[in-house]
Image 1 (cartoon, helix red, strand yellow):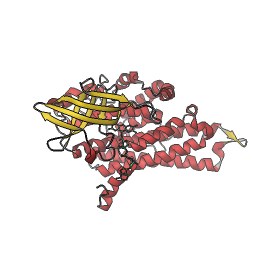
Image 2 (cartoon, protein in one colour):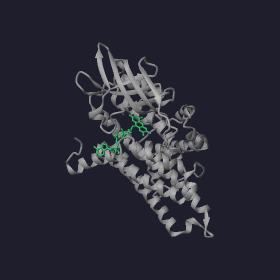
Image 3 (cartoon, helix red, strand yellow):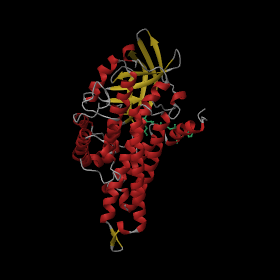
Image 4 (cartoon, helix red, strand yellow):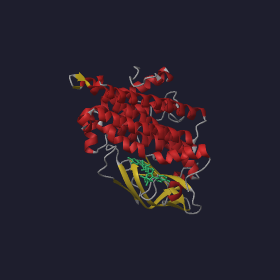
Length: 390
Ligand code: FAD
């Protein structure tokens, strides 16, 4: 597989030849199927749901789990795939990641062997799309304490009541993992809710100005009945849920890396072509400084993403490690997309020059899966020994 020019230190060599082949297939898919339509879908705020199954056919969606692995994978390999998606379109990366990351990881870590066998293959081969419902209208950063959605057990059935906000894919997903507090013991539990269950409704959030392709929804749950067999059997606390978030935060760091690479590649092309004062603007020292900062941000972020994923595979990764990767890389992303937009001048604010979409999308990536502030507090709690959370 050809090295990306933005892979300045050649991190790609850490992937095995077979992993590079699968990444290459993803890269080709994104160039062929997604790049030509991304701006149009983004402008119309529509999601190319029809591409879910063809993407699944590449065979990378279940790469992490024994029930669905078709090739020898690693956390670096899976992170790299997310980066390749975001490098072309960060929305498409989110659309896929909500299902193959958040929903599948919840079932893989929280489900019994039977639940894993029932759901993971269908989510991996694209016959089902998943969603993940944690955030609520009144509980974002403090979902651990502030979650209001309740689950009440009645025999072999649970009754869910409450509301969720921002839930990606929820309007069309076949299954939504819903997090709720057990009214008996106030502990967090996870439930697999099928689309169409009476009392479940999802309404698209309109007028978003970031990740416009992703269909986020407000969900209401009114006496939604879920069988005990659809409760995630290995989840019994917020700590269990936090294990899912640790893995997916690692993935969002890779997504942020891909988002800044997408903006950088478009800006690099532009500064080589655009002339002012009789010379390409790439020859001006102030423009060069911005491009040097951008590639340094990308390279430092690559290093952090690779190492935090390796720690995941080694079994040494802790919450604060993933939190640092998410916080650091999204911050570098925000700086990088702004520099890239700046060197494209006025053209940098239209969709036509390849930077504006990444610039706008970076804001949502900076915010979801724990804002920068929340992730900084997790890191600082670890290094200072003092928790700023009340
Ligand atoms: P708030 O928690 O209200 O925070 C507002 C501000 O206050 C932030 O700057 C925050 O850092 C700051 N703040 C809060 N508490 C503190 C504190 N103690 N100290 C310092 N600062 C603080 N959720 C899902 O469950 N599923 C999804 O699929 C999903 N997809 C999403 C997709 C998009 C595009 C977006 C924008 C969000 C998505 N989310 C999803 C929700 C996302 O995880 C939340 O938006 C995020 O956790 C922040 O919560 P909030 O928006 O309620 O902000």
